[in-house]
Each structure stands twice: as structure tokens, then as C-alpha cells.
Amino acid sequence: MDDRSWMYRDSPQGLRRMDYCNGVQGFINFTISIPRNFTGGGIRCPCRKCQNKKYLHPDVVTMHLLHKGFMENYQCWYAHGEVFVSKKRMEERVVGSTSSASNVHEAANDNTNPYRNMVMDAMRMNQGNVSQCPIIEEEPNANAARFFDLLKDSDEPLWDGCTNHSKLSAIAQVFTIKSDHGLSEVGYDKIIEWARSILPEGNMLKENFYTVKSMMKPLDLGYQKIDICPNFCMLYYLENAEMTECMTCEHSRYKPRTGSGKTLVAYKKLRYFPFTSRLQRLFMSLRTAEHMTWHQSHNTVDEVMVHPSDGEAWKHFNSVHPHFSAEPRNILFGLCTDGFNPFGSFAAPYSYWPVILTVYNLPPGMCMRSEFMFLYMVIPGSSSPI
Image (cartoon, rainbow, N blue to C red; front, side, top):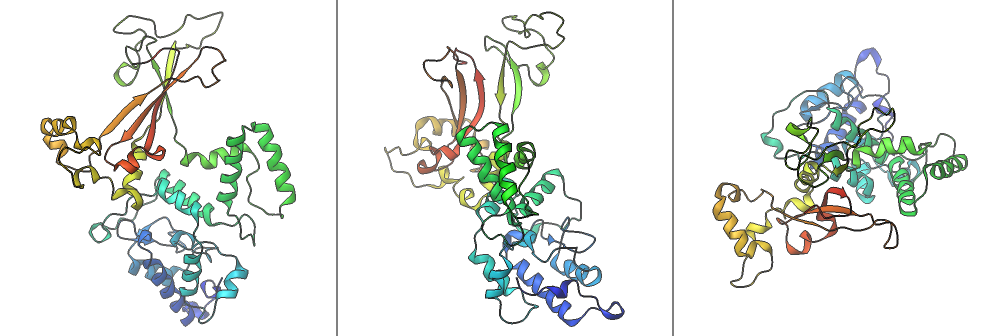
């Protein structure tokens, strides 16, 4: 990359050198040129005190950098939109002043990082109208901290000088291979042990499956186990979480204890996949947010139904619930379920019933695609839950 020794060069008598002042201005110009760097009307401050944990107005960030200096080891501005490019490639590109960020900006734009985009789509919050949001100095919450760590991993090279893989891309691809081919955890760990032995010393490849799973957890679905009545009468959830028998059929919640076991085992339980954050991501992503009001804004043709919003049932719902239908961003779902045997048709008579939600706000070409069908819950058992 371009020469950034100015960031940490000692200044005589505590005064800032002119190249440092020019470099700070170049950093600010680079940062504000990327709209997604703004959150709450501010940008991350990389000074020694804030360390990218606070969002401040660009003018305040400038003052912090002039008075306090940059945080350690921040030659690559990964938290401000700069994609990692190897030193060799950057040196081939760089011409002109060392205090300008334009060369790095150009190089970053030439090298799209899909793993950075994956993290941004999965976790970043909606920026909204930055001119109307107040600037608040506060420590990042747990979700923001996990996002920042993953964003850093998406740009950090697998080893010093690596140009093909970042820390996150290598882990994500190996993790995908394990899932696609059904590798055991022991087999995965052996492959990683061998791979680390042939990679350069100091590589950032995670050493085992446990650490990889912990790192990737912020990007997974997550689920919650909920006990249910075996006759599908009720959920033992929220205000009913402490009940021990069904309020409808009076069937016991738990199986009889055997031996000296103290653990209570429910007759049946489902896996619930919280989907609020997944719905929020539809509005956070620029690729999908504009389509979330399509059901109300599209042009209809009389007696031609191209979408459920053209049907009489949808129009009747709008007339019954006018307050809900007045906001086009409110979400309407379709729900479906069907059972299947995960072990093949010749295996034991056992089945799973996945419950799928479809977002009907989206146009016909999107709402029935698999990426917009959300797995809502999974119910085990041989009989239908409906």
C-alpha cells in the first residue's frame, strides 16, 4: 500500500508534521466518500482513545486524530471501507503523494470483497438519513462488536502477503466443504492440522472446528427449543413455560422418569428459528429494501392476478385492517409446511415438518425464490402438526 509511515512518525516537541496533517485530511476525504461509513451521522474514530468504537462527526474525528494520533497497527483502514490489497500490488499502483488516500481508494474499488459484503448484509444496521440522526458517543454493544470483528476478519489476509484469501474467506470455504461433504469434526480438525502445517508460519487459519464455529456463530440462524404438547394442542412457552400438562387434552408434558435420572425429558419439542433479524436484513440491504413495498406500488391490471396482492382475499384483509395496510412496509406472510423423512424413504418411519414463511411484500420473481423463504420452525414427528 502507499507509504503511511506519516501515521506514526514521531513529531519534534509534540507538534504535528505537515505530512501528518495532510494525511489526516486524506483519510477523512476517503472515509466520507463512502456513504456506508456513516452511522448515526458520524464515522468511526480511529484515534488512540476511541479505537474505532465510537461514531463521531468527521470534524470531531479530525480533531481527535490531530491531538491523539491513530490507534496502533491501523495502516490498513479496514473499518472505513478499505479492502485488503497486498503490499506488492499496491506498490505497483501507487504514484504521487504519500499523504493522499486516492490511490488506495481506487485499488479498493477494483477489488470487490464478497465476504465483506456478506458480513455487511448479515449484520450491519440501517444507516437511514445521516443528516437527521444525532451523534451519540457510546461504547458498541455486543452485536456491534461482533460485526466489527467479522468485518476486520473479512479484510485481514490469511498470512502476511497472501492475496487470494482473507481470514474469513478461508474459514468460510473450509466450513462449507465440511457441510457439503458431511465431514466429521474429527476429520475437519485433521484436515485443518495438515493445512496449517503447509501454510506459512504465522497464518491466521483457525486451528479446530470449535473455534471456527464460535467465530461464525454471529452469521448463523440460531434456534430455540420449545416443548410442545404431543397432540399439538399448545406450546409450553412464555406464560405457559412452567406448566407440566396440556391445558386442552391434559397430556403430561414430560415422559416418566426411568431409574435415578433427574432430567425431565419432554414428549415432543420443536426448534424455533427467530426471524426478526432476518426480516430486518431485507430492509438493511439496498438490493431488497426497494422491493419491500412492491405489493402496494405495482401497477395492477383488471381481472389479471400476477401476485397475491391482486386477489380478493388481500383486498378484504386491507379493508378489515386499514391501519395495518396504510403502511406499505408492514410485512405479510404466506405459511406452508410439509413432512419429509430426512433419512430416506426406506429408513425408519420418522419425519420432520419444516414450517416455511414466504414474504409476500416482494414481487413474484422474488417472493418464491428460496433465499426469501424463511425457515420458521422444525417440528419432529410422524404426524402432521396441522
